[in-house]
Amino acid sequence: MKKIIWIASYPKSGNTWLRYFLGNYYFNKKDNFEPEIIKNIKKFHIDKELIKSNLHNQDFIEYPYSVSKYWIESQKKLKIKKGNVVFLKTHNALINIENNEFTNSDLTLAIIYIIRDPRDVVVSYSKYRHLDYDKTIDYMIGSKVNVPFVRDVKDSANIEITGSWAFHYNSWKDGISLIPRIIIKYEDLLNNSLENFTNLIKFLSNVMKLEVNYEKIITSNNLSKFKTLKNFETKNKFFENNSKEDFFRIGKSGNWKNELNKYQIKKIEDSFQTEMKYLGYL
Image 1 (spheres, rainbow, N blue to C red):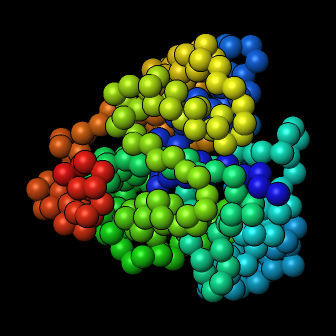
Image 2: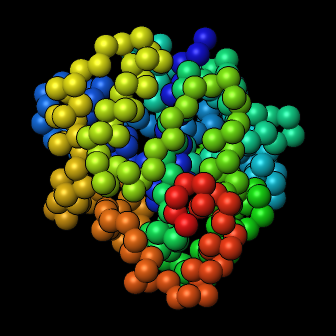
């Protein structure tokens, strides 16, 4: 039975902002700011019971791709409290490794993919991970499927295989054509969040056979504004932040112009020219 709606993106592309909006629209009954509302939209991870027998298996460190054989079974075991649909966040690419699909059309109801200018992603991802820009650029333009670094076998349930920025985007744009999807540009959300969130709810309402609540869209949009999230993080530690840096940093586009040198910019643009032109970034 189709039950998963994926919220997919490359890291630092606006996934959390989108989850806050959807959390407020579908789960916020009080219409007040609830910082933990996005806990209703969890990150997908491998079912730990499925890999319990492998927790001491060195394969997960030497060959982390072995988690792929647990993707589908983990999705089949999902427990849904209300209804028959679950929203899941992921940074994983929509890939197939050794005939193991990340997901399929039997389990997936729809895909929401959020894309961001890779030049801005470099800046945001670098600061979040405390890496220099050159290392982040090399990672983002690297081999099609990057091998994640696994520190501990206990981390195996949370392994996400991203690949390059372009590979990741194309995998979700073109993969499994039977699944309905909507692609949202981060920059469009910045320019007019209400219009783009309205289009998103129309898409989801069509998929889930629900009526559109326009008043709720406006309320949810206001509760999810960057300023609101930033103010919360200033006063409290954001519970999903594993970095010493702020999770909600600037909330603007084009910061790469002040941060990257011309050689770094050219390297990114040369590597992703096709995709960036298609998306209107070039």
